[in-house]
Length: 120
Image (cartoon, rainbow, N blue to C red; front, side, top):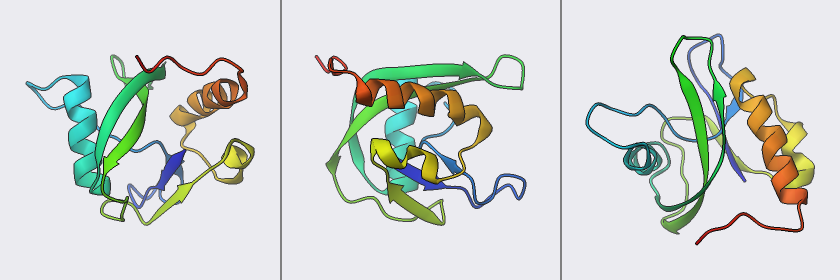
């Protein structure tokens, strides 16, 4: 699993997150995820099954995370100060953004499951 370390805002600098970003007006969630991965990581991705979602502190804001595969490029630092591939055993090795925590727990469950997520 690829994790990215935030540079800003200062309150969250040094914390790790799932790569991605905000949906802009006029684009779908999948379009936004593909765009954000191009902008933040310089990669093209295939979007797979959803991992889950978490309500954020701001009313009406929701963090949604999908699984994905890189189809072009190698992740590089653009918007973060570090990137790290984490195995299931390493998920607790980094300090996660508070909103990402429940989804890290979900990812751990998915990785430990004998039935993989459906990519069809």
